[in-house]
Amino acid sequence: MPFAVKDLIDVKGVPTSASSLVREGHVASHDATTITRLREAGAIPFAKAQTHEFAYGGLTPQTKNPWDLSRIAGGSSGGSAVAVAAGLSPFALGTDTAGSIRIPASCCGVVGLKPTYGRVSTFGVTPLSWSLDHVGPLARSVEDCAIVLSVLAGYDANDPRCVDVAGGDYLSDLDAGVRGLRVGVPENYFFDDCTASVVDAVMELTRVLHRRGAVLVPFHAPDTSSYEASEFTIVMAEASSYHREELERSPDRYGEHTREMLVAGLEISAVEYLGALQSRDVIRSHWLERFQDLDVVLAPTLPHAAPLAGQSTFTWPSGREEDVDSTLTRLNLPLNLAGLPSLSLRVGFDDHLPLGVQIIAGPFDEATALRVGKVAEKIVGPFSLGSLPSAWRDAGRTL
Image 1: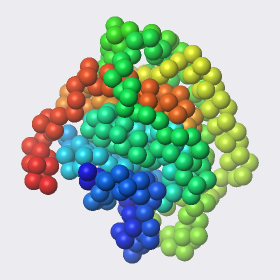
Image 2 (image 1 turned 120 degrees about the horizontal axis):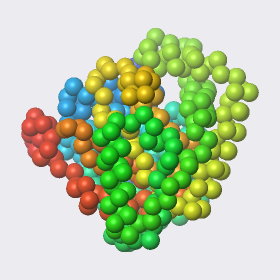
Image 3 (image 1 turned 135 degrees about the horizontal axis):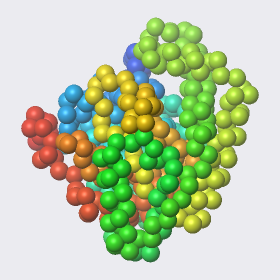
Image 4 (image 1 turned 180 degrees about the vertical axis):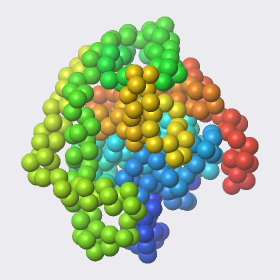
């Protein structure tokens, strides 16, 4: 099976550009562990997919959304999501630091899985933030994501952050249904400042799951006031640490947005960084407590459908104005801080644009998230290439 690879992930003998002039002329000398494992399983990497430069953004400005070419594809794994949505690749690899698998999955109506932190090796992957980075698949079905994860998951001694926990069996219980599962429905944060279409679609899914035997459990998401400050303090400090020498040597070879973020990250003090790490430990601990009483949590992936290219803000009914960068990451980054697995798939439409729901599970319990996702997929309906604009359908058939 051929697959596309986000251009942060090394494929031996092929450039890893990270969509940046900084990497001009760089050719990978070895395969990333994820590539090695997929090759051993018979898969063939055949294309590199665009990313937001060094994965430092949620837009992937080089790509267009196959559902509506005036819309963003999301990022930073936007090229990977488009390759799948447009029928160019059966599945693709992406990375996720603040939502970068799930954001484009939601924008493009495909399935994207961020595994538990440490479940999949990041060896051979250009880091954005090594303590928050995850590697995972994007595909057109939940089952395809399960198949790919079964190959990717497992300990890798080359990655000091990879956890020595055996990969699970992600297929045997995939059709087990949801009867008896405790499905958490957040009473705060995740449904704040969302479009009515998103709220209605996700809540309707919870009601259908309840009718199929799931037990709905309202709960309070913890530590919400510290999510964004903790996430971006860690990301900015770690990204600037990685890029510091190159930034001093060749600042003009970075794009303006990435350069500004890296320069700002150099101003973060050790005290601020360590405080953010401590805050993350508290967030993770409190989320683990919630999962003592829950099997999964259902929440929107994004508070809206894919924004227009060039759109800078959303104005919510409350009157609050929010930057698009914030709207894209706000509902995703808590699960990077907590390190929990999260599966995003299409839950409905706002006019012609897909909307996403994320199914969040406890640590190393991707199997349950996938099991619930399979039921949700049957309810909503599978991805259909026929619903894309004709130009993209024709391109997919030709290739």
